[in-house]
Length: 417
Ligand SMILES: Cc1ncc(COP(=O)(O)O)c(C=O)c1O
Image (cartoon, rainbow, N blue to C red):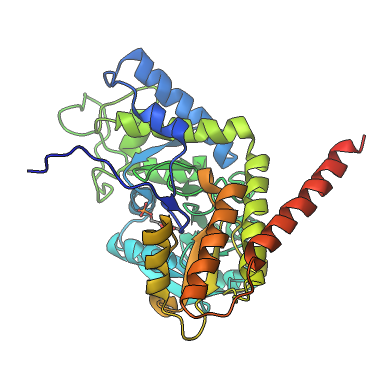
């Protein structure tokens, strides 16, 4: 029986997520519980829905939290939108595209995939071509794939989907808050996220939003559970294949009926609400700019250290960079030294990139100048010890210069009447 209470070591989490939670989120999560139907609780639920409408850029009524990590949001969206036998198109450009495919297959879909090499993204023309070839009910695509750091442009895909009468789902777990996401303007029908990246919270809640078109598809299979059911209530002959992730039931729970489903994870809701408040207080465009700025400073720093960067940089997410491990350097030893000697965590990688790149994040609470400079200084020291030839001070120097240059540009902008 462990005798000590939890006391995790102090770490600076500069990987691809999770990152250190914003202290405001941690404080919100320390608040006392209230009952499920306490007006305070239902009030928090309603506020959280409104906050996430702003974060997602949508007026969708059906904007809610799915309890569980980001994967729970993906699973709820796919299992609720897909009926066994439906055709689903999944363009894959990294690990999380494979996850969408696997979840869609488990939901009984006839899945068609298209793949590009890791480090690349799809053109709208390639996706339209695949839609013509496969005639899917649903396009399911990741927005920012953390495994490669690439971000698929989505702004032209909504119009293509509408023209071909295809539902449009995307996973914005890694991108939301640090990169522009415009649910309504881009014609998205279903969008799911997580808290542990640019939203500055812990994993465990999946903010999600569904267009009226998606809600109509989902509600066509709506059932009311026996035990709650009243005369005249619907019983689907073809129910959604999961109870926990049945979005028609979650819509009833989060809607005016407040029809009982699971017991809302109160502490996670407090955290998710605070994550959204942080972004709304800062302003979404300002939050995206902050991620762009600190991501660019980190990129300038690693390049100045003489390190190569993986992937097509025109499509890199603002909040994470994949750094090629130099020849002769043991990637795991460098990560180990950063953690043990400096308390800094950076990320490893999967699949075709395993052992080839580190992933360094600048996101959420950790998208700051001090974290960028500290990480670059530590990386330089550890690399030198590992035998890599790096010019002393080059990484920190380049990032410092970047900040100085952009500060003066910002000042000049502010002075312009
Ligand atoms: C793009 C993307 N989707 C989904 C996930 C899965 O998230 P979770 O581990 O919270 O279920 C991640 C996690 O890194 C991710 O980056």
